[in-house]
Length: 478
Image (cartoon, rainbow, N blue to C red):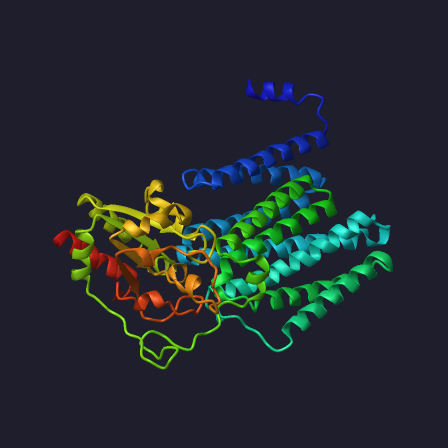
């Protein structure tokens, strides 16, 4: 019966019309998926919805290829390999490695878009292709290559296979500017002089060098913005490759990724109180000259107050209001479940507990939201910076777990600080501040935090998971 209804509904529809209809359904899946991803409550459903849309687009693409048996085998094998890699990654990669996995997958997408466009160019270069097709190919190759190379550097920095501080050298901007000039010259040559595969290959290499030189001078503190920006680059590169090969699915999907990535990049830079130009060229993350316990600006030794889990547990147990500020250290220690246990234990004693989420906490957009959602933290306890900042004044204890830069008052008070002007969580306004850190070393941005030397601050040194476990026991025994 179902098959009969389907045949009646599709009667008179040509193959091309059927493919276009499939792409329309896939596009609806992508749009609904993005909408659902905007909330932690529906994020998992959003992934599934977008995945269904992608499956429809893949199947429709088979018919566009006018498939032979060989083509079908190649596509099926490629999809199988990609599916296995994606499944294993989703199951095996630790939460702390999600940012670098995103960077790696994003780089693969940009590289794939560039290669697809090159392949198309090689097929049509001898057939006097139209100007639109040539421009689309060139745009995809340049932007896709920049995204690919930039994502490699982002991955290496996030994986700590190279330093997270900005890597600069004299004349770096001149070199990068020269690479841009070379690319523009090759664009003029390819469009107005001669269609050359060799020139396109040179453009590919130069674009990769530009991508490497573009991200190297960006510090670790700005990696969330960089990842979002590179994601947008990949999206527009994919859309351009869709124009080059005439694939509606790539055009729509790439445009959605490019648009959402661009909006997110703007929102992230605004959340840091900085322009995108400043994020890309200010080199935040240069090493600092002093650490905790070392010499201060005037050569004096900075002092801090350390505590033990028992005393801090009593402080928490007899508080009325506690705010937990999660950071990358919480993710590294895989301590989100213990943090949830501590919150539950405090709530059983009548303590109000919330989580303060800074837009750029962690190493990718939404990192802390995903981390805490994994521990089944109630969504209404996750409060964004704008909603929670006024609550710190009435808070008894702020528990900063593995965060640093997002609570650094230097962003408000020190005009020559690299993060000056960045909106922060007002943790310094609370009655008591407790830092859970391994040491007094600065955070990922390499910027010292004066809040750690505040008389109201207590340092609890050690692995975050172990420290939180001891705090749970101390609260129960208080």
